[in-house]
Amino acid sequence: MSKGFPENFLWGGAIAANQAEGAWNVDGKGPSVADIAMYRPHLNVEDYEAHQTVTTEMIERAMQDSDVKKYPKRRGIDFYHRYKEDLALFAEMGFKALRVSIAWSRIFPTGEENEPNESGLKFYDGLFKEMKRLGIEPIVTLSHYEMPLALSVKYNGWAERKVIDDFVKFSNVCFSRYKDLVKYWLTFNEIDSIIRHPFTTAGIVPDRCPEGKVEETIYQALHHQFVASALVTADCHRIIPGSQVGCMLTMLTTYPNTCHPKDVEITLMRNLHTYFYADVQVFGEYPPLIETMLEQKNIHLQMEPGDREILRKHTVDFVSFSYYMSLTESAKEGLERASGNTITGVKNPYLPSTEWGWQIDPVGLKISLIELYDRYRKPLLIVENGMGAVDQVESDGSIHDDYRINYFREHFKQMKEAVEAGVDLFGYTSWAPIDIISAGTSQMSKRYGFIYVDQDDEGNGTLQRSRKDSFYWYKKVIETNGENL
Ligand code: BGP
Image (cartoon, rainbow, N blue to C red):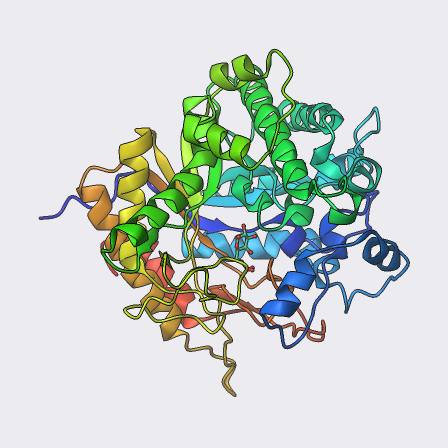
């Protein structure tokens, strides 16, 4: 008899404010960097890259454009006004937890006000109270791919050290306000993604970086985020006794293409780089090999005298991560593109891919869990995993998404095996339990949900919610604590 998932395992789902809430300019919310993200139909890799490279001119143009069709994250799925209905559906599935994020620009519209925006705070009061009422534990991310646009424009975002203070102020307001409602906090979503898309994660506009210093600016901004993360971890523990704070990593387990030592070497280096971000937050220091790598790249970080001490003292309680795919690396073939994302690697012949080229690899999830637990010896939380797909609505309104059910089933089997191997995993929140706007492509048609939302890429539709086949399947999984797959 297998022992299965632990009792009180936090089954649930995860969404982000900027992809779900909409209401981008309502109740005093300021513009955020996410409001600039544009929808580009027929994306190919080149478009995707252009999409990630925001210029000052693009920002100025976007701010004069009130179109919500072109800028889908401004409308989201109107979670802002419909959250009660959505939470009721999550509760129907039996959710124990829901991961959401707080939009910084709802609380501090430009990031620099002295007083927070009361209407913004009230919205999250309502959200968290309703979750509690339904028995759904909130897991809250402070920074999920958005920050007040004003901070990007004024300081080039996290490139400027001053933003640490703004973030600490914002976080402290959240801790004090929600201390009786929220116990689990994540500081930065996929903190490593600053390297792949510096604008969405850190408000960095490449044309505002000193000449030839874009990469150095990005690593400097990352350092500021590390320091901010450590500072707010300490504040959270002080303000909310018994609170738990986690780092959040994009888990990109990478395999060598062959057993040629050069393939193994390049893979090792890539994996060290993947772990670097969590290493700083768990071990409280920069890994020596990464410091050398930065020196060799002629990247010199400005650190203040107390910074290393801050990182060392305030480490995280648990490690959370997203897992969508594994990568394969080859020294010989170089960085040939395997996916439609900016993540590179060679095609793994043993793995199928989603329509967006993300390689589906359930065993990679087990490998990731084992590697992360062995490395950090901290409780783990999977806060994103799921399959983006185009869904077909039948004439009777039903949606038969067996591909999604298969995806989850295979991943859950591997999760269970990892738990049985001794990994301390305390929860799983799928991305995303309800269809929302895609972070990477701004498409609506890249759907992840158990719940379908009637809206197309151009923003047409009733926004009506309906249950897909996977809804009933996931409900059973939760009911049986992962026994009935
Ligand atoms: C992660 C982000 C999420 C999310 C997910 C899926 O990187 O943290 O915000 O959206 O990826 O990506 P996409 O929406 O581009 O399919």
